[in-house]
Length: 91
Image (cartoon, rainbow, N blue to C red; front, top):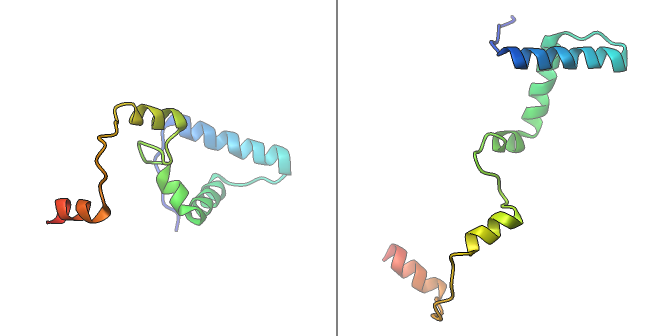
């Protein structure tokens, strides 16, 4: 049972372009439904990477982002143990 999926004109154009490229390179005519199924399978196989592509920020940070983040930090001269942090945070 096929279900319609709405997409904007740009996405539709990209799908048509992919369809034409596949035909040109392989000589095989594929449907847009086959292309979508293949894309979904690929996304599912690399689910974590695909989900991460929707995040606003990327991890790990770039070197420039790390430098910007560290610009405002300073060494207070006080050594803090892990147990101290736990006590402060969790009581």
